[in-house]
Length: 160
Image 1 (cartoon, rainbow, N blue to C red):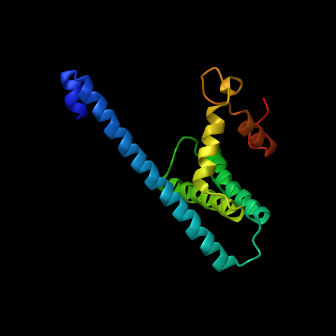
Image 2: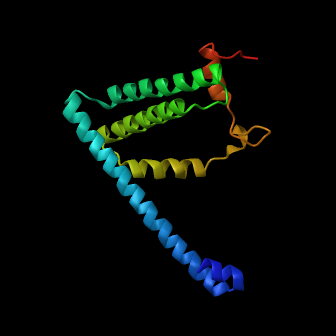
Image 3: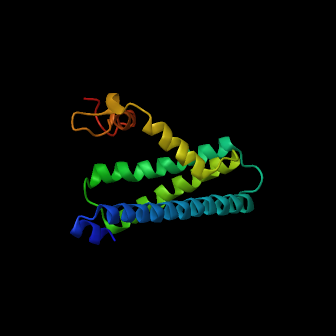
């Protein structure tokens, strides 16, 4: 439909194609939300089975910080020892650690009885309503000041 609309300059077909595309997007969005909720549920059940009832939102948040630290460690080592060079195993390990962070955050949400999809939507709404002008660099990318400060505090880079 889209190809016909563009080839023939057919505005009606273009409108119909857009409606079809929106429907496909909404369907994919719904499927993604269901999948995320499923992962949240399954990881919560696994956590309860393996760890038991002593888990609190605070302890799970601390675990999330540990997982984020492991991801940061890999990225710092990559930047320090092989900047710009991803080896296959490095990328896989970063993917695993990033996944651990996500699953761990899902655990915090579960313990707080928060729906992951609603949390993501709330974050997108919050970030969409922000004025990011104060956080942009001259090259128009989001500022890395916070990341540079953390790296500086860890002694990875100089403050200069």
